[in-house]
Length: 353
Ligand code: MRU
Image (cartoon, rainbow, N blue to C red; front, top):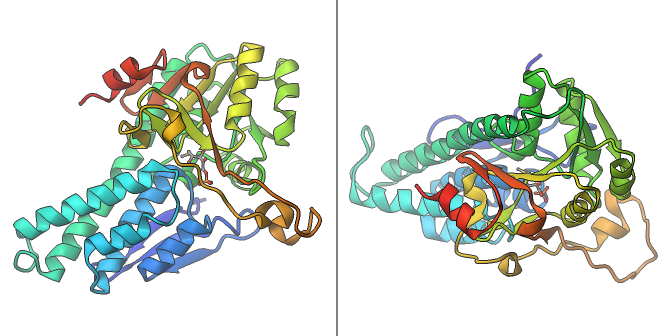
């Protein structure tokens, strides 16, 4: 049976973006039609589309929609950049779109209008957004191969703990950390995934478990607070998570709770891996201390999914991400190969063109 797709452009130059609404999963498979750049901004903000690489791909298509309505590329990019602050793939994709547009002003596109005309520009931008989408698909495949090679000693039926959702729903391809799991499964290793539920929005419970069931991967859902216990019971052979932004020294921002899991892995002597494409690295930031951390609404904790779980007016702190220091990360699995040990020197070597 064909799996639901995460996002795709439908129609030609005047087409629109169609997204699987991840806020409705796993109960309902509902697609959202984004026909304006505001639709895309809202979809990113409320996590209908989420996961660092998928946000970047959606934003690239969002630029095409904004330009259809006559706004400048810079105006549209500035606007989309305000949707969420942490995943650097968003800003990377918007920068690619700006650069593509500036090339278009200089040179006509084959089959398009005269240089600088709207048709030429839209055509060029749509081609760039499709290229970003396709490159992400290929980067996922490369991470899967490098990650499975790195884990070649992984025991048959071994346990992998993961956090948040890092699969096809989070990317333009098969995923980051989960793509490695899928590849291990294809290589006959029968991995058993332990999925942290990922408070407060439950990406692990709602999305990761949904994806793993679709692919017939053995998986067990745990509350986030169970991670230490399953490690102590000897059930976890490796931890693999994704990333939203990686600083030049390898410090890694990912979904809130990742830092705790990394610290536990250190205590229990379990390797902790991060899987991320090169588009998730931000070499302009030296260390994780400078990564902007998104703060989200208190209601996600006090009345998540419509159920009141805290007294009215309870003070809440709800950062959406935390930063795991490089020294807690055994290796970073990228589409260009493995960063290990994780430090500024090895990051620079792996990312150099
Ligand atoms: O708030 P979200 O759901 O967008 O957070 C997503 C994550 O933290 C993922 O682990 C991360 O984007 C990497 S997966 C491709």
